[in-house]
Image 1 (cartoon, rainbow, N blue to C red):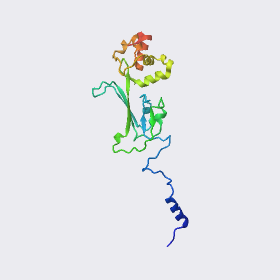
Image 2: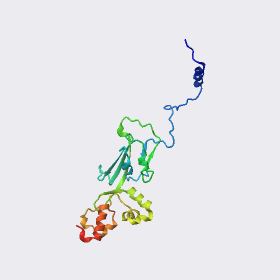
Image 3: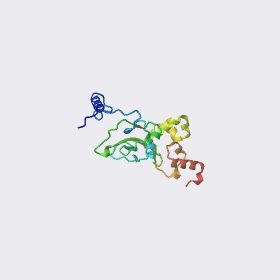
Length: 211
């Protein structure tokens, strides 16, 4: 019979009275480092522009524009962004490409096990701004207001941004569908999509060439 070495026996006895080298998880929660990328979430700084949706390499973010909300509510058109964090690869591209740099944040939550994967998501909804002539989606209200505030006096180069700063915008506005040939000078002071805005300038500069 071989007896254990004295050095090994001494190490075993010493370990009984010393603190463990590893963390006590799951008996005690572990504290991740400051730059740890845990569960992603939208914040109140999100403007709903969709940049995160466009740049997500894993396709973990879905963008849906609802022009005719169901349920009979008084709410107008809105945009919903849904982030499936069970599909997320935690690359940080959504935060890196966010115009505000604060629209998406990574929390320190890492215990994300669920019985139903449909619940592994976070979402946010933003009111949409529609063209006052044709009703096409322009962007979200928060996005337009953020642009006007960011540009400051330079916003006066764009009539839509001027309107964003001078009057209260509504999600739907007074949409009055009309034939593009009937667009006139009065439409300069409306919030228009790029196509309708183009028609206004063509009508003003080349009245004989509009059909």
